[in-house]
Length: 340
Ligand SMILES: [Fe+2]
Ligand SMILES: [Zn+2]
Image 1: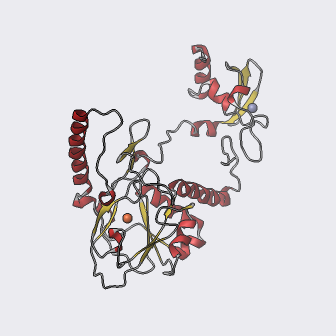
Image 2: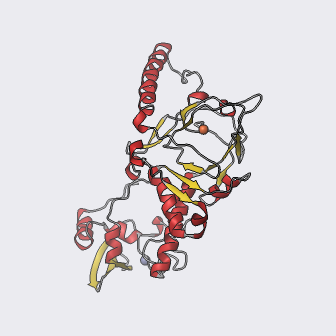
Image 3: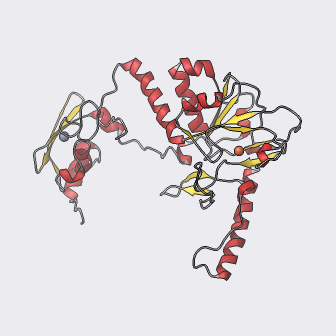
């Protein structure tokens, strides 16, 4: 099926409302028939609406615009400020567009840091800390009690803790028969954790995901890089031997070039973690590493993983809480609660 939108329809919408077409406006009507006034969720689906709509009448008064749509005469009221807000670009929060790009010299003497007791007590501080984590890629939370599972308390404020192949909580300390180089005193080169395609507790781990993941517009969305767990490259189904070999050579050249970028000293920020320090980072963009240490010492680090979507959701919730206290209200066209 092909939806035909006439030029006059688009032009009519454009003239009245800064380029927003009638189909868009009708779809975003906030009346009580279109959206539930309490939850803000949609009550009608796209197939409940006429396939072809147009603006039949426009009335503007004191900051709001009232539209009547053809062919059914449906009426919608929009705040002009809301309409204006819908026309600002919204970068994909997961791509480089929404992330602050930095070099280590940006943080001399001022590592992005939060204070755990304040984080718990102050929505503004928490929102700013989560914002730092999302935009800068990491934030150091200080004064997190150094007790077993303390890291879980921190992660649970940000999103859902994910149970991975290492469990819900993992311990990094020197072991007698280490299953992972992390459980030795050896230095560990920069890497992202769990680059596998499946990283839940039960699944077989296979690294079939790209090292550099792009969004549909070709913007960089995430990187995965873990030399320790990399397995031999294998032919793809139907790959001819010559072609497979050629691709393997090209892969190693690209892999080396990427690794050389990652190892640039100006991109590496080094600091020492002490007791009660909890470093939180975006594992889709920040690689982490450690220097070696004496295997006879008592170093004990605990870690866990939480979904990044939860951090973004938590930040938005905290921002809403903070602004709700200021304005007393959040309601406007288009605000909705997620979930089903
Ligand atoms: Fe790691
Ligand atoms: Zn409506």
